[in-house]
Image (cartoon, rainbow, N blue to C red; front, side, top):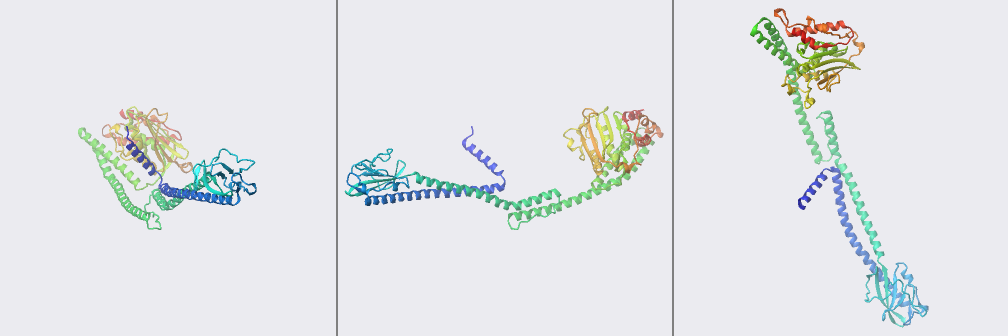
Length: 561
């Protein structure tokens, strides 16, 4: 069971945590209001006690003075023969009692008999009546000082009346609620003063803290502007007073200057690095092309094990040239180098890419559907974009998987879709799929991890977007679907460039696609891909303004003959 001490400590920590979550402006104003309340409450308590004493003292003095005055009046004007009051000398006691709602009684000092009240006097005709039993008898103990009795403040005086010279006791009583009401009004006034002072202190604290926090708000606004513009060279506002906030502003400005210098150095280094990668990649293309051509000729001339070795070197060189091309494209994109653009039919590009990937599609269902779709772009980069998507779909899916590539117009956009029915991309990898050097661990991390990064870079450089979207119903369950949207050219400006795309199985199944090399007269896989692209382009030129469909299995079947 938790002890009371630990419970109190836990409650104190929780209260302090809640207090720290309150904004500073309210904490300052609330602190000043609480302090003001404590001061005013203490002041009001002291004033209340002193006022209570003073009022009661004055009330007692007033009552004593009133009793003395009444006793003097009775002594001068009231006539008593020892038993009754004489009518010709009677005074009206109600005049003395009315203002303060006082009770006045006159008793015979010798026997305690009541002789008169503020309403009646004892005479031969009538005796003074007893009203409500209030002060019906003379008090046992005589006291000439005011004292409380039955809700009244009672004062007594001895008076000798003429002509009998008898001693009577005058009782003068005033209700205590008179002074209580006065003190209650004073207490209400003090309470209102405390509450009003606290509220004013809170409002004043809010105003002062608002003024005090205004430089902080200006610094915050300037920091947000720097974050929005990403420009650390913007100046921060400096308060007029040389205080802690001014020191903070100078410190932040110095920090931003240091960050700006570091950022400039970093950007300069990155620019030099990009320039180096772009230049190195460009310079490597020429020797790699020479090596590739020599290895291609050497593989055709050699036989047996030497030919296999040359083919292996040829494959590695091709992969190296592909990687260098990827790095060159990304480096140019990073350096914002743009190649000349011209109207390009994306449908033709997709068909050429599908024809080039015919040997890889031997065990897949590859289908293509296109329509005339012109964009202002770099044909080689668009070819690389489509080729990367289709090659990823063929390389990272099991045999028998359906792969579909399509091109269509959607308003003022050209939409390219590449979808497959394979296992798909893992959900944890999907947010990072377009980053560089990101690979899928399911297939052993094949590839360089640059393919989809190039796709995004090319799409963005052409003013478009690329998204990984859920597969459509026509593709089947599961799988992967990439959608690229590019700005389309207007039909008036490209009338001379629009041609249809109608590729049929018979066209792609001709010898123009290229068959496996048979001796020296055959061609390599690379030349077969080029011939397939030329055959697809010629089929496109003949087809007019129609849509097309290509089956990759036919391509693969022809290659295996």
